[in-house]
Length: 115
Length: 113
Image (cartoon, rainbow over all chains, first blue to last red; front, side, top):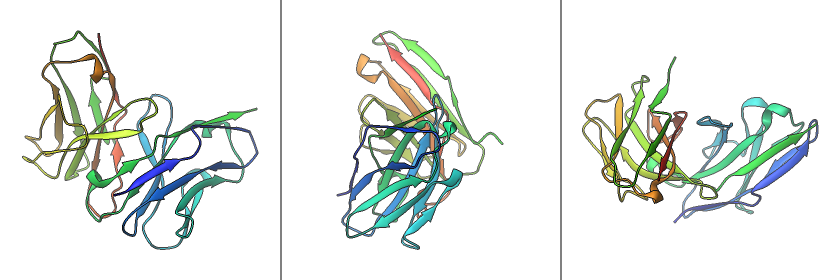
């Protein structure tokens, strides 16, 4: 069975400071891991994905995430927050090669960016 | 460049009423999905389809039915709406299985009184 835990439901940062959104996962197999972002009243958009290639994954808008198998973590980071980064972020795990029906979503982290 | 389009965007129903949510994609994707999003619970899969004419149950299928008569459309029906079905519904689609990357619609907010 697979599961994903987003350790913070809300994160608040100042514009220009680093962002860290934490995600731990549990998987019986080699997982695929994703981060999606949801801006207010919008659908989810893929930020980045890990599928057993390089452990440091770069995504859109300056975000990146590092897969750490020993810590079962896939934390999302960005060196410098921008106001437009304010959104909800979802960590997602899949430990099958099948389709989207095998995805497990985290409960989300709301990122607030203050001036 | 529409992607995934959901209609309607908002709807208010009374308990016991029925309705259908329509999802349309123009990317020739084989796989389509319906999720519901509730506060503090992430997204939960209701039903999905792996191709035209096929449907399958997800994690929370009770109270919903679906149909995929055309490849580009995936309909979600509520035969007798209940307040517990108040939620935001998202449709998504994907081209292949291994990558599991989904393209989402903008959502349909349903309130059942």
